[in-house]
Length: 300
Length: 142
Image (cartoon, rainbow over all chains, first blue to last red; front, side, top):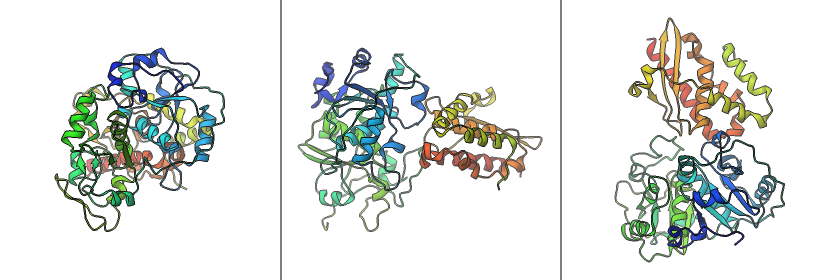
């Protein structure tokens, strides 16, 4: 671990206390060598309106996605991107963003596919920092160019593809979308653009736990007891050690993926980023409509 | 070649003149310049139409006055990109004769050369705003 962790008592109750920092802690650790603060937002201009001093911008859509194939950037592209941004492989990365940290956890997840060791999420994200009227800067970040290595992305442990979901049937699936999307009343979030799924509903046997249930009003993560109640008891994860989460394009489910893996400590959690835009459009895949999970297909 | 009212043509030129790296800053300037709603709308949100295609809540209303379109748009401060799009459409179309608005080409959005910087997904919201402005103008001039 490259940099001291945040000793907040709340974090010590989670499986991976080192994966979170509080706004108080970050305010005291704004510019130490070896720590890089990264803002990752849904709105591409929000960073420019003011950001945490010293933070650099990372855009999920134009930088983390491949411009041609529906996939993420590869090791070569990440090496180029991070070298220009001045990030080293051994740096501690603290990520925060708008929308309850959706894109912060998405970036966290993608960086874990590349095995970047020390990545942390700012509990409460951008909204909490702003709400607390902490220091904001519009100064453009300037970091010295680095030489981030070319690392092969490993999708095996943390990412699920459609075929993996078939193999996974019989094990728990968590659908983190809104109840209307789960039941099939609509194919996209209320008030969001329709990204083109042809059918509405959910993957058979998936439990519905909207992502927002895991956060408090101030966007911080709920306590370990509340999270256990929500996922282990109510959603029936029980002793499960292998879970797949999905949503519409994989951003909200990266948030839940973080909760399940880093806060609850479930051994194997994968994010199915193809999510409903793939499943809801694929030919001959089974779908369940309505509020009941339905049973896992047996013929796969 | 598509013809635009001067207001729209000047916006296209403004974005074409700055280097690619400065176009987002320019969009932010327009976002900051979006005028607040007049009281008759800010006090009556139910009169405004929600633009469902936008990721952030955008509301708009069109009035027709002496054959010209008066366009009102609002978007939250936490969504500067959306505010920027709203501002550009407002500048391009506000006060224009209704037939100019009705025939206004969607190509305007591409000509701003923002798609590559902002991503096509985000640009889609701007098309949604324009389509709704045109529809309201058509409804109000029947």
